[in-house]
Length: 286
Image 1 (tube, rainbow, N blue to C red):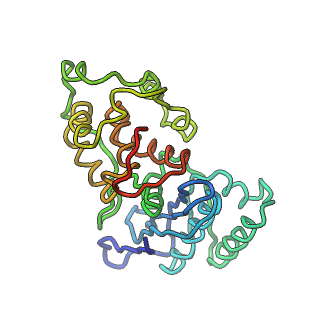
Image 2: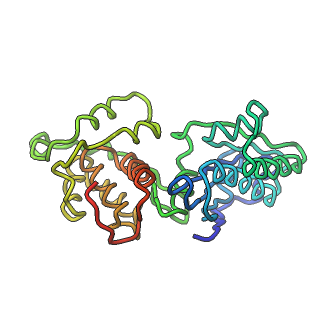
Image 3: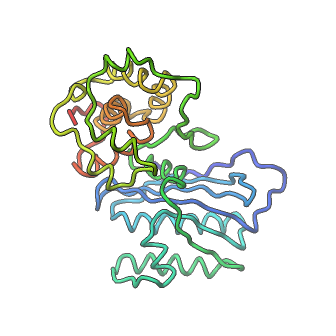
């Protein structure tokens, strides 16, 4: 995907001297193809621009640095004099603050470039940490750039998953579904959003009643658990990955009981673990 910078219905004369950015880097494997994504907003929350770009091959940490650099450069182009950049990479934040040393030669070069742009902003630029759960827009933009979509993207921006408050699954219909792995129920009981390691350790433990089902059979099961809006949202999110191996993983985990956005995150973690393709039509049972 090429770099995309999208205006978003700006009000007349928006204040652009003080801006806020959220950014993220994604990697399909580590190392692997990298993607960066982010959104630039005014302090009042008006979106000025967003970016989603494939940036070659490298590591997760290089992708995170490149996302911060792109956010800084784009904000400067928009006229920012003062900027706060939010990223969910603790390593990048701690290295830029001086808390951690930068010992990796490749990271040191990106560190220098980020520092140079920070100094170029008249009133400075801060890079701060935010939890992944608060960085979903940037995450979706970065993941889309490497073929691991996390949410639908529209001209107006990222469409995050929101459960239908009017939908309640019928107990009888739920009872007819194949049993889900016990670990799914354990993850759903967590009071905080799952982290990477939570998805990494979530496994089926062999074959189950969902492992060989195709999308056409999985969609009705997803609708039973989360309602028809979940099927529509997942279709829009996956787009050209609808029937890929990546897409099938997402459909299967959602049918097992993970909310649609968690199912996509689990699919991306599995793709990194197994380092396999996400091309449309690829088949697999995981």
